[in-house]
Image 1 (cartoon, rainbow, N blue to C red):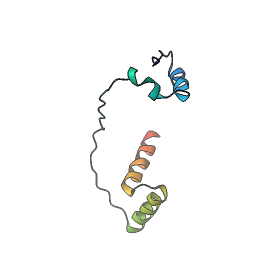
Image 2 (cartoon, helix red, strand yellow; image 1 turned 60 degrees about the horizontal axis):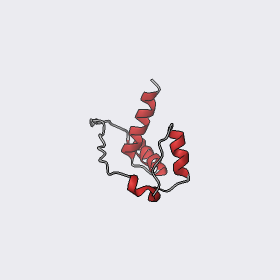
Image 3 (spheres, helix red, strand yellow; image 1 turned 120 degrees about the horizontal axis):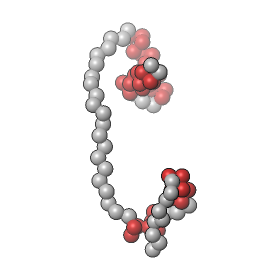
Image 4 (tube, rainbow, N blue to C red; image 1 turned 180 degrees about the horizontal axis):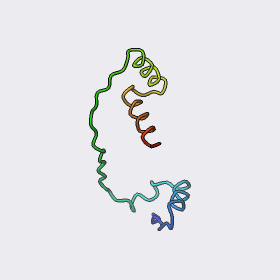
Amino acid sequence: MPKIPKFKSDKEAADFWDTHSLVDYEEDLEQVEIEFVRPKQRTILIHLESGDLEKLKLAAKQRGVDHSSLLQMWVKEHLAQL
């Protein structure tokens, strides 16, 4: 089996893997453990008028997410603009 080459850049690696299969390099692979750390989150309470909540739920449904997730996305987008 061939050895995985050393890459000089991420683009070079991406180009290589676009045309090669990991199956051909199984002997060169090793098991690794990855720990995903989520940022700490805190819960807040906000009060919305009924009509606003319904609009929020509709907008979320149209995007395929729940209303809490949509609200989080919107807050992050607005904070990024500060």
